[in-house]
Length: 82
Image 1 (tube, rainbow, N blue to C red):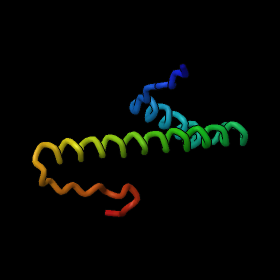
Image 2: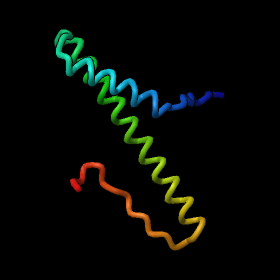
Image 3: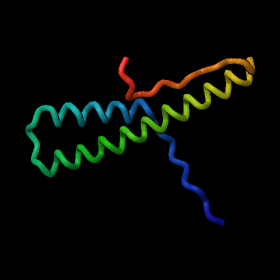
């Protein structure tokens, strides 16, 4: 029997790590190779955070639909400008 890996994603930790990476890259005191590694990790964290937010939004939508059956919740486009 094969066990499926279930790694719990910690949104707050990922966001904190992302902030550290951004600060380090903004200082501009790391090598090109280190900056590229930080950038790659930042992209991974950003995608994981976006996925977690989308999943949370879907859960909220499901709960609202179950509760009232008539709620029209429009998800916002994170790239849309206000």
